[in-house]
Image (cartoon, rainbow, N blue to C red; front, side, top):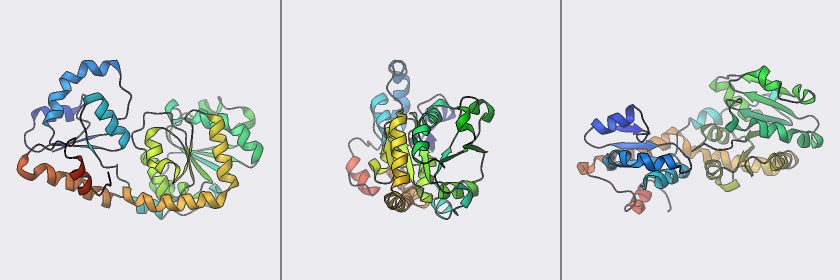
Length: 296
């Protein structure tokens, strides 16, 4: 049985208590240790002990599991359909000195206000800058929080189809992910990599890891709008360098394709079923890493 987030109140938690046989748990959350965690750990330990194997979707999720529950996991990333984004078609209406943002733009941790604060400096250097926002939210309420002189530069696209998303990510001059935290992986960021987008993202742990510490896209200091402006200006000013990074990212993103990720998950299943025995990842980390093609 494969359970997702068995350490939080959910059907997965109940199933883990009730089930017998090989159990695999996947952990997605990334969060700092909080006092409340000390109170609930005694109740969760028996559940975690029942798991034959544990998967974390990122290093940030693994560290959260280690810190909160003092147990370890093998990192297997979330999967995407990389080919779908690789084959996106650039659309002229979204090209140029354009900034793309995708997500629930009203949600503070998605970081849209940080991007808005960075715009005056960006526009001073690139007067034709336009901003395209894809995703659900209150457009009028958000526009009311933007200076009138900037409002005409924004276009809200609403929800987009998967095909439109692939074209959008392949088209924009730079894709920006200014998230402030609470991300353990970043599926949209992985999709942007697969599309060959030129990326600027906050340096929160999940994004820093996903972008190879800057190898596949630019990182800015989280919640620092001045640094964000500087990084976007650099992408617009150095298109050749930005394209080189995006090309590397497009190739790298194939590692997140479901064909690759599913094989790794199946390998975990096989290990969990062998002899129906417990697998202690903290002591067997090297053998697990060899199995899943990791170097360390």
